[in-house]
Image 1 (cartoon, rainbow over the protein chains, first blue to last red):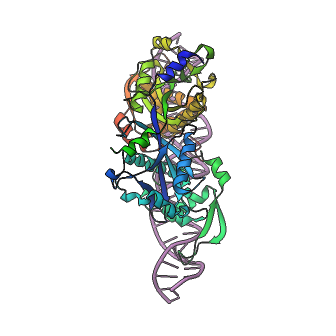
Image 2: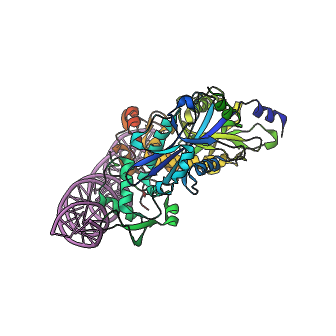
Image 3: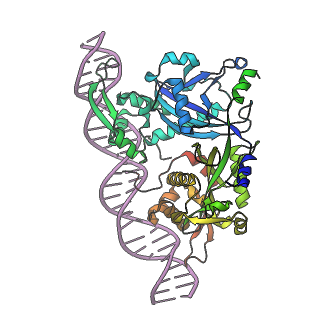
Length: 237
Length: 237
DNA sequence: CCAAAAGTGTTGTTCATACACCCATGT
DNA sequence: ACATGGGTGTATGAACAACACTTTTGG
């Protein structure tokens, strides 16, 4: 390696590189966000996204999985890079570039004991507290992205248990979009994707009749992910 | 600021933060990419994306505009953050996190004198050389993103002069998607957006009859940007 | 038997596609 | 006059939105 190249690298200032996770969950009624209390006494009652630092020998993807695992004990979660935030004044302590990822998890899978050690808590999207730094902007971008993705794919089931019912999925979509959907049209559109597999089992307890469980056909889903579906009424302004 | 917080920041290793630009252009026939020759003798004939370092007091957006300006002398260019690449081994010299932006520029606006000082050159997308580091992956992601965006918006005109004809736009779309489109359906879809304003002027020289110029209605376009249009045949697999 | 949620079909309208001819003009 | 690319209309089928009744079963 030539010396002048090395100099070119060495003369550059380095930045702290952080990672923040926008973690969405669904409890059957509401879309929620998992936040942690920042351990700074002076900034009491300041909630923030779960975050961490990128380690020297760690890729970004890898780091975001690690951080999510540390908080939730969950692996193999839907996790996607959202955007990188690098405004020089975004972190008043020191310049930090933050790569934001968003995650979709099933609230049922989340172990509440863990949340205590991090002082983590689910918040309804409609009722979010003020967030640290530019985390509010990150959440805004994430919800927009989630809406967008959900309008194109049945991605929503990532937020549900493995076995789910169509009415559950519908409620989730209604929560994501903040609008009511017609159940006949919704189920027709959904089933027309041929991505759902009907199971023999019915959900018990929630309703008297009980709704059939479905699961996703993972293989087909992955193959078709780039086939855009239209999941919302009124794409035609 | 409390000391323990500062320590938490200080104990973290910092990374070099770079920025790479995927610059698309259109010459009327082909979709092209602007590449620069890397000034490393040992890596002769290695082409790479135009890049640079993020400066200490500079936002990412700002840095990508600056870098684009340094290469092309152009301002107010369509520029969008694509993805951040942070694989620890992506840059063999030293760990560098790179934020990739993609830009759309009109080839006519580009001053060819400048390109010499940077040894920059346009390459047809179909005929790209091997690129430095993971720049190939960046380009792949960018073209996918461009296709996706273009299928939803008439974004393509960003690659054309201010006044453009419908046949020009169609050629551009055909280049982006690598397929032929029906001119009747294309112009109907396009005009149905009501985002184009017909001018009195006709294009001369290219065809005998001459095609009318149009311009974009910027205000409407910005407002409607999140109204998704379907610009491609066969969204229905 | 009644309340509550699940499940299912039809119709009108809109949108997408496929396709072919005339127009304007420079040579 | 003719060659070249510009511009337009229609008919068919698919998908969407709007809408209401029957089914199941726990209480």
